[in-house]
Image (cartoon, rainbow, N blue to C red; front, side):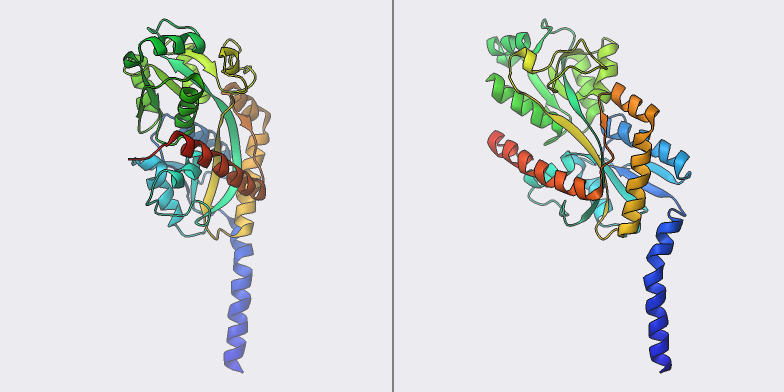
Length: 322
């Protein structure tokens, strides 16, 4: 009887523990891993969210950049292998769910090994060139490429990223064929675009728009169907002669698999409250993003539909990671 009583008591304690942990969470540092170098759009979104969480939830959250190549797989793998206690999270872009289509040996399952927390934001990309290129819109740029394709090199922020998929779609739709170089992050790609080492790059507004405004790169088009209030002078890709062209980059928050539902809910609610703040919404809008803050279920369904779309693009363009 005594053994049974002890067992019953132990079970009661275990059953009660998750509720207590969610109520008190977080009690120590929460590491939000960004699997790319500082300075890119993923890092920028992460720091906006983390700064506000530190004000609203408490000074417990930090951003840790875990870049290491492999299109974010290194940092994501840290989260996949972490304890599901809410103290190691992943904030990254849509590239996370693209990687299984690119790499044969991804060390995790992007669906089974993670818990979707919330879809944070989404926004179009700016298609830009180096200032010395004598073209002021995408149509004129592609005319130059068709005449002398050997003179033009396109860049992407990493293999399979939204940047890469946009470039491949543009090549297909504009019927041009030229070399594409994949960089290890936004910073190096933008640096080479500024210096003229590459002549075309698609990149989110957060990291590209300041460079456009500073005259360091030249914007040719934006990948939304409508012009953006933050950059009303940049024409859409559709205005440049490619009807219906639209592509967005999106950003989400994940935990490891088996993250308790109550902790997941607390994280989602906290991030959604941050994104609902008028100043944060305005700040993201100015950077070309729509603040979302979705439920975990919505995010899971969104991931499934995006994976289906990206798989087709990668297959059609025959994109392969080296």
